[in-house]
Image 1 (tube, one colour):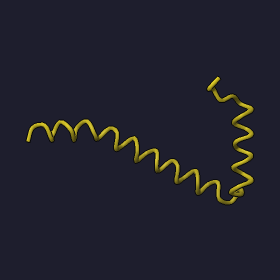
Image 2 (image 1 turned 90 degrees about the vertical axis):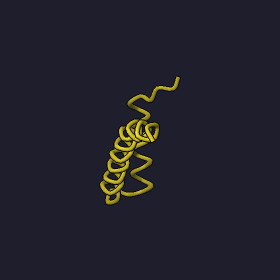
Image 3 (image 1 turned 90 degrees about the horizontal axis):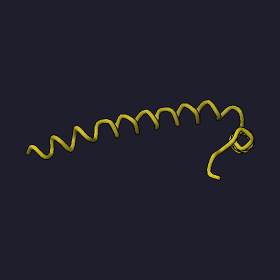
Image 4 (image 1 turned 180 degrees about the vertical axis):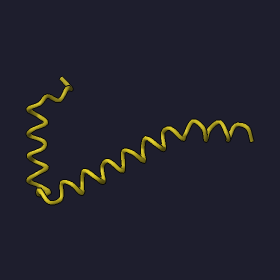
Length: 56
């Protein structure tokens, strides 16, 4: 329980396809990729920021 299988992913993709349509999927994917990239960048930068704050 808790793991998502292939069947669940297919159903989820079909629901998203119906809700947003085929034309919007590339936009949504691009926006999601940019958001994940920014999130990773922010989490990698945060330890450096906390070290700088301790010094001052």
